[in-house]
Image (cartoon, rainbow, N blue to C red; front, side, top):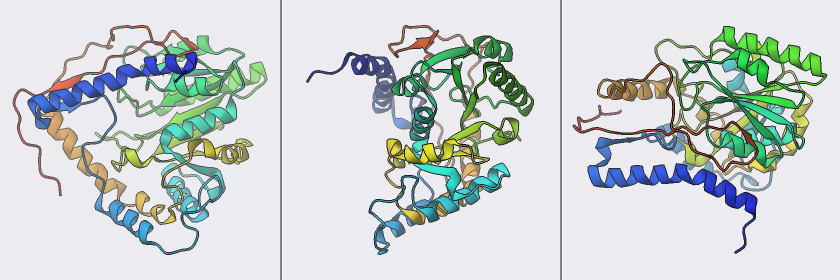
Length: 354
């Protein structure tokens, strides 16, 4: 089969993630799964809550006509109403079902947003280190990625951001809590970034959108609070999912949203087929996935405490990853971090989970 040069290069550029995942599987087979903590892919090590599985079974048994047929691109109305209520309580804004689109995970949400925003040659700024698929998402829709380094503590470097902004900048993509560093960007820094984007947009005569990728937004520890991204900048688009906090990455249950009835709303809904979702037509899941999140995060917190009590990794002020060329197309100054696979040489048992 003849494969396009572009796709071949993309496959080669992404293959290192799969190789690392396979190496983790080999270590588990050789040393035992209780001795290896694999951080290559974002697979939670907890099973989903029982309530989610019950809701999934209820959805499968639901005899309502048309439940498994075609629906609005954005997803069933009652599902979006339930999720709009969840967003309203979380972000202290009045979201309605018209303000969100159900997608195939946060990846589908980001692809829909970027397809709605980008013209060929538009630039998307991302901060390093970053989730390695971001450059591919931008390239999918004709965009160019410009990488901006963070400061020595992995926080936003606003001076570097200002230097990277150009007349072609269409969006700035942030991920907080961040994968892979775990940093949470503080409200003061986000507010200054919003002012910077507003000033630049006024200068060049077009809006620069802030795209917030927040699949880890409910997994916070040690008293940290995630700033409300909709309060720091009006031209904000949200991409998120329930993959991490409910341990359901394989179900691809995500959404993208905007507030203030931005003109992009209709465009996002029209493009929703880009992220066709396995479960977005199962309306009974809408409310259960929004419930009991606090209790579930408590279980994650217990797992974190158990791990951090047994594993300590001294890090320099800023981790300097080994560099290697990446095959992702149209990327400026792309660097690729090597993520560790931790191996425990003694194997204490994890606490039982109720």
